[in-house]
Amino acid sequence: MTDTNPTNLRQQMPITAAWIDAMRDAFGVDTINDAIRAGMRGQSGFWASENGFEVGTFMPIRGTMITPVLPYIPTTPEKAKK
Image (cartoon, rainbow, N blue to C red):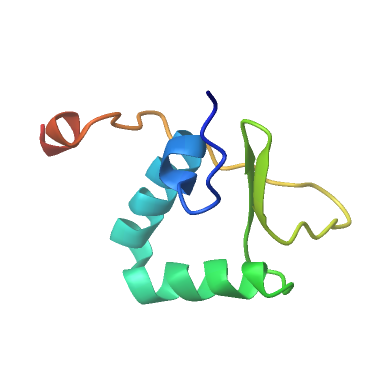
């Protein structure tokens, strides 16, 4: 059975969750959480799509869209500590 619980986004969007964690470490929890909340309220600031799930507000932009890519995303807390 597929888990479709909308509150379980960490399992549904693991790469996005790891990226968000890295951004929180780099820019601060409040800054990133504010951007995520803005996107969830329909404002620009945050949008993510993974495994058929979307969170936030997609805002088409003119010009070039930049997709951040991390060279390494730890998959477990143990690997993140190394």
